Length: 94
Image 1 (cartoon, helix red, strand yellow):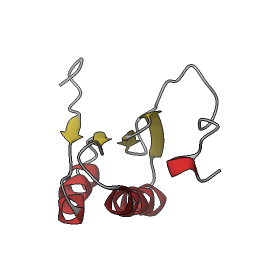
Image 2: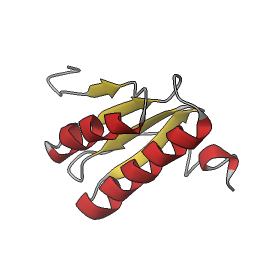
Image 3: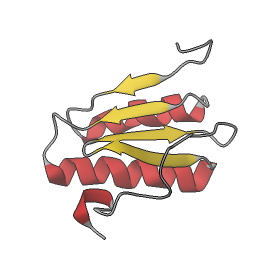
């Protein structure tokens, strides 16, 4: 919890862990997704799933580092010091 706000940190090991991400997000809890323990194919599936959550339920997605993503519900705001995505794009897909 940060300043009274709950934030979930999920470090998925396989795609089945996407359900945990979805449950937190449906409860309007921001989720930090750390993909360090996943191969690229599974990690891309997780990000596709998270992108679908954000598109379907509203909200926003940000990529603070190469293998870490933050998804927030529609009533939350991500404050950043840069505009848009990094030049690399998601998984170097510019």
